Amino acid sequence: MPACAPEYCRLARSNTELVFSPRARCHHQPPFTALRRSFSSTFSLIPEERAVSPERPPPLPRALRLLTWGPRLCLRPLWLLLGLFAHPAWKQILVVLPTLWIAASLFIFWKCVQCPIGVLRMLGRALSSKSPHKPRTVLISGGSSVQALHLARNFHSAGARVIAFEIEGQFTLLKYSAAVARFYTVPRPHPADPLAYARALREIVDREGAVFFVPVSSSTPAYYDALAKPHLEVAGCQCFVPSARDVIALDDPLELIRVSRAAGLATPQFWVVTSDEDIRAWYESGAAREGRHFIASAGARGARDRLRFVLPEERTNFRFPREISSEKPWVIIREPKGEKIVTCTTLKESRAVNNVSCRIDTERRGLVPQRDEEADAWVARFVSRLAPARPMTGHVSFRLVREEGAARGRLVALGARVGVSLPYLCQGAAGGAPAAVGKLLHTVLDTREALFAYWDPLPYCAYYRARPAERRPPPPEPCKTPPNVPL
Image (cartoon, rainbow, N blue to C red; front, side, top):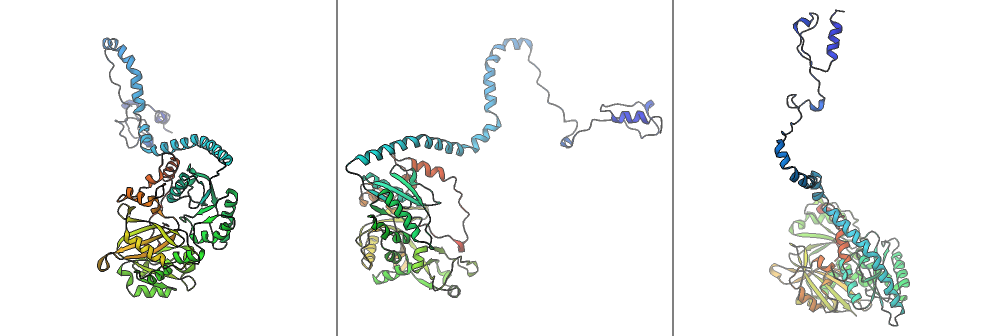
């Protein structure tokens, strides 16, 4: 080993910058001038000349520091507060977390008022039990819908005791209402055991002593409410719903077309399909390109399932998720172009005693109340042609279209649903639909206005607290459009 090797190794291990003189150089190693400090890979892209700490500003002169010592001492807390509020973390909090603050405030507000409201309810029940004139108890279904809330408030204003229920898995809107004395959840009705739903309602009626049952049928078909009607009437509860046979006649689109023709009313163009070959033949005929079509379940099973799907224009895009057979027929209906109307008709002893009509505003996606004498006449004429098994009492909703073109002004029925629908919001607590409609003419029904009441504000808060948490699914494909929301 050369004699200069130990000196070379010692210099290579040093971390300081050394400059070798020509006399210390060894002819056994290559010449070099300096050893520089190695930097980590984090700063490998930063030039070594720029990787220096920032210089502090020069201090103030001593005389100036003595003169400004007092003001600087007084302003020091202010500068500290400004530096604290100017921190970048506050910007993130102010931008990202307002929704969390609102939800937390509503949650705290609900927890604070929940206990006093419970105490007031207990006192009210105790006083009502001791009162010689005990209010009648009304049972309402569809506890997640706005029309059910409006119905409960109307009954409460009339002096009735309101009991509401909803199927499991739905939002319990009426649970937060001061107009509802008690709220229940029942199992979802299933075709395998349709009487399980009736037994659950019978248990509620026996426990609460309900004397009236008004189904809203927003989340369940009215078919199951009609099956429960005999069981509830035995317990002394009057049901405002037609019999099962009459519900099938109203909820079945084919029966609706048959009654409309018998009454001399216009009907839409339709095709009955009972197999996949019928669907293929319908597409091959080219009818799908002549307008907007939807396929609806027909027959007794159709009234029970109450399904409706929008059809695509091309056969290749058709992927139907349901069975089509002679036991489960379907009907394809062409939707006419024109003004769409939705009604809420009150039937009493098979007579239309009240009818509220609303125009569907597609741009603002709302209902516009209006006085429509033609719709009233159409409903009266249709109801007069019905042949019910027994006098019908309840609510029915009709979906009508006022056609354009050659037959302008002619009303065509696209469907009917048994139960209280959204146009019921036009009816005030005093009962007179004409007076209520007069105040709302040519105005879009606002959900916020329908939810809010100064004496019952919690449903409004609960509804809009739960809405941001709901994640709407992406829009489905035309061939997989889900069934329409019941009106």
